[in-house]
Length: 214
Image (cartoon, rainbow, N blue to C red; front, top):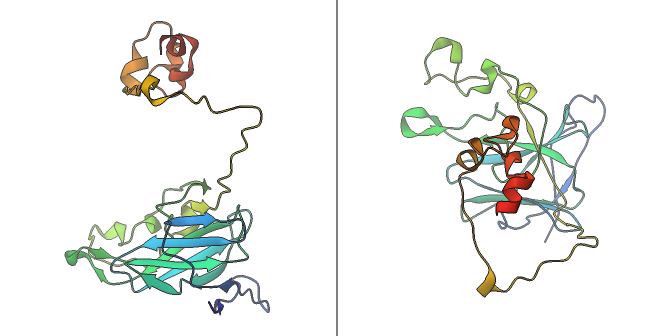
């Protein structure tokens, strides 16, 4: 598998060029997956014409490189960065037709969160630039050229390894296993032993009275 290098210059650093090594990688699994050596990026889009992987600095503030995913397999765009590591902050810019009446609203001016991301950083700041169309006009068939990156969150690569420490799996046999399904808000909202501020919340499920009941 031959290396393909990014043609993107490092943004915001005159005179410097950042070029990441990228290979074809694999279409599966979807998302950004660390394998101990590098990170495989895979994103589904049946109608995109190009997908750019945008890398950010460690604070997630400055976009430092854009890398075109080199391969397209079974409607999945993918590439492998051997130099990427857990903690890498990224997003996507996806190119394609802008034909709202046909259901296509591709707009590479908008930084997209990876729909398969296992980690996110930053926060959303409400701004018209977040929309693919010119929101102020009231016409959702227009095309907006403003960059949404300053106002939206980024995705982050995680290390999926989990250290159990001294904990051990319970090894409950299947014949003694019970699946308990409940509606979180309804279960804790009126429970008299759940603190009022925790009623109707996920945290309410962790209170002693609920745990003892379960």
